[in-house]
View 1 (cartoon, helix red, strand yellow):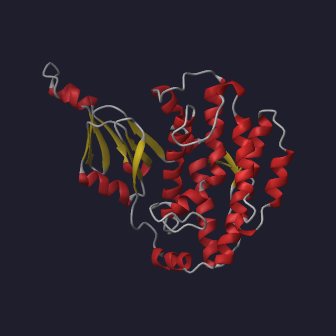
View 2: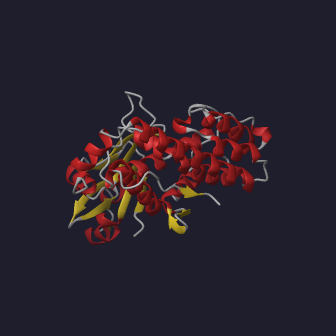
View 3: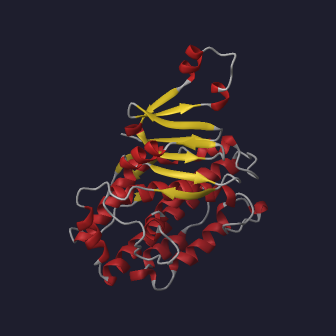
Amino acid sequence: MIKRTLYFGNPTYLAMRNSQLEIRLPQVEKNDTLPESAKKELFKTIPIEDIGVVILDNQQITITHSLIARLLENNVALITCDDTHHPVGLMLPLSVHNIQSERFRYQVEASLPLKKQLWQQTVSAKIINQANLLKRRNIEIDNMLHWADSVKSGDSENHEARAAAYYWKSLFPKELNFFRERFGIPPNNILNYGYAILRAIVARGLVGSGLLPTLGIHHRNKYNAYCLADDIMEPYRPFVDELVCSIVDRKEDFSDLSISIKKQLLEIPSKDILIGGEKSPLMVGLQRTTSSLAKSFEGETRKVIYPELV
């Protein structure tokens, strides 16, 4: 089942009632002209088991602790945003898998050669997906395919960086003078927001597979609590890039994160992808990726299943 992504951008009261998320609007509750019966009809409830991601993007949102606890029990990724509407926090459950301690042990004990091999697969899959997106935009990709095929264990020759330099130079129209950097000019802002949503989905999938998002196979920044999520999301990034390209191509105003743009980015979890030869919503397919990663740590396989952007 496809889990829902909920976005709250206005002052809201969020609580739990009868095992459901209850949404109440303060402007309605404080309206003395409305009868109580009318106010109750304006309340909305959503089954918690249907939810995958919740984004809190207003400084006047109130959420109860009992609701937070129940959301985490159901492996919901809870994202909080600052007063500039950029994601700044991610909350995930500590335990949702029945053999989590065993999975943690396999992950911690994974050998360096295995991690280097997994990173090789990850980089190659990322470059291929980047190449396929460029191909859709009628841009030469022979060099990208060469780099994807030439990635060695651990990407020792840093083909990821070579491919990225060409990719970002070619992806958007020349007149944008685009340079990819976190605090750079738009559409960097849209990419950042989309990647934050993607990162939350990946971290949620890792936790659901009994893995610890902190221990990466390549990323190892001691200040980063989501190194493994940052590793595994790499081949999925081009799906976000594709969505951002469509926004730029339609000449929408992307100088700011408008409601329209956010609405489009919230479709990332339900975006159709091809994975393992089958069509699947991104959030569902991602669970196949994280499950195959867990099996790689356990020694059942040495291959992570990544999606194809075709």
